[in-house]
Length: 422
Image (tube, rainbow, N blue to C red; front, side, top):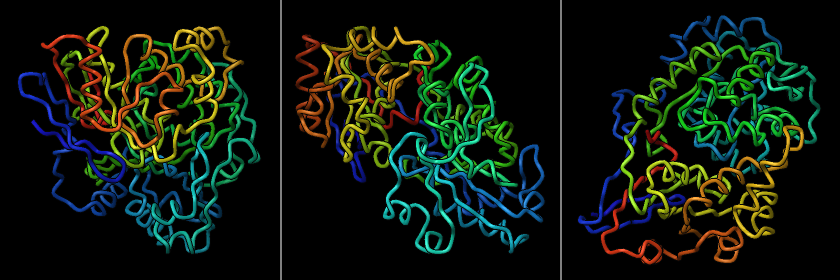
């Protein structure tokens, strides 16, 4: 069997003998056909908001409107959503100021090329765009999160008299689902607030897993942050493998998001098919820009892997490791056990940069070997206690040698970030 795996802006072909193939796990979102154009889907969602006044009614008379928007690491089709949002606002309010606040969280700033690719040249040239800096930007202190951490939110967001967020909903490996409240936390809060929310205790919680919202401690903090920020309206879309909009949800920051999560859950849920080897990806560009982001795809493989099994992940990683602290945590250690012990010894107020990603990767490496097919470079991959392979054929040969049996079974998860493995 041949399976096309997303890799960067292209694909890699994986071939597996039928006798060794256990299953191919694919989100039904990739075959969902809405029967309407992307723009129509977005407009219909805005015209029929969930438990909220229409955006036009909220925008009338407002002087300072801010749209929180996902950054370059997320495949939100803002070239579709943002023009519709701007047109809707301007239709009823031509005088009010509009600012696009790019929710970088703790990621690097988006480049001008990335902004133009995401929003279109016209929007970049005509609309005020502020790229959030979680370290240097002025923040407003809103007290404490339910967990006890400080809640410091971007002054740009807090000065808005209408705060809107656009994003997309997909399974998320510790927040349950992306979208909705995540636009605020971690999107436009202080680095200090992100560290408190992403502490080792929360990441270690059995409820901080893909597809889980109830009792998820990170989600509870995020809901509080969005409420305190005054997030008045959201537009979240669901996308397929080609990053095309297949459904849109708009309205109340929680109710519209929950409705979208239920829709994603109905399509993304797949039954685990435990195998000795699981081959997966991080969904291609922009989600596979670095090793840091690629941990997400590994968690899908982890969920359908036998004890002692091997993960093969194909991720381009054009930006390398994606986090200096993340890289140094592993490169400067003897292995996953040392990394995990150090992280779990830290209290909530001692959270270190990138610690959450390191914690999840260490969890995986304590149970499984991971082979990366990537452009990141062999030294970088091996410094992080991962195995390097130049292509999928080499990766499979290494994986089979690690298993040490001829009767191995392989499960393929072509897009690891799009599924909820049950």
